[in-house]
Image (tube, helix red, strand yellow):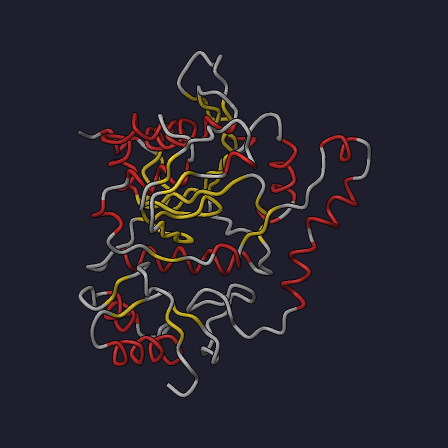
Length: 335
């Protein structure tokens, strides 16, 4: 009953799926964008070790969590669930963010962007419409057989994908209560699946997906440039770093039109007025124009000065549906 009183408290925890074979990728992240994340953010690279004599072990000095699973691609669903369990046992937290070791953050100010995302999630959590699940939302409309085995031959060729909405594994988040649900009711089913991100969205109860938050992760992360561990060990790390930083350079060269995730720019991290090509990841079931006007007013005039105004926007649960078919609404500058 009082077990949570003895846990460490963290508002947000970031886990990064990794493996021993590609450990150099995790080190690349540590030398790069992870240094620019908010200082308060706790993160762990997740590795698997089937010979471990316990369910998990934290290596805090290395920001690493080792779980008792295989360390290959098809074991990612088991690995992520084992990581959820380990984090749940040690920490009391509000949200868990997840990404992979092959992702490079291309934002010039990750600390500002992710700090704003954290504040937004925590503010919404106190409202009548908290977010339990979010990321780059993918809507599977029809059942089909996955062709992903062409990229990962270890996957079965007859892998069926059912209609569902789920968040891309590039980056997604889950609330504490959503993870509790998955561990309590869906762990075995998820561990028997092959695609980790699809499995999470497939098994998460609709209650936790009723207000999914769309995060344009492709504007935040890019895959690392292809390079080998041998190249790094051979002394060509500078060349590898240069390739990895290409995405960051592109982002810096953009004349900021504040095109990133609303209401904070994904490139400069600032709260600014929406230009004509700003996309809002909100669909309005009723009173579309009135609600959009209220959001623009809150974002451009006094969102940072009048907290009650932003809370009012979050409380309009009957009018907002995030992450649905019409979730990407484009508002013209004349609106």
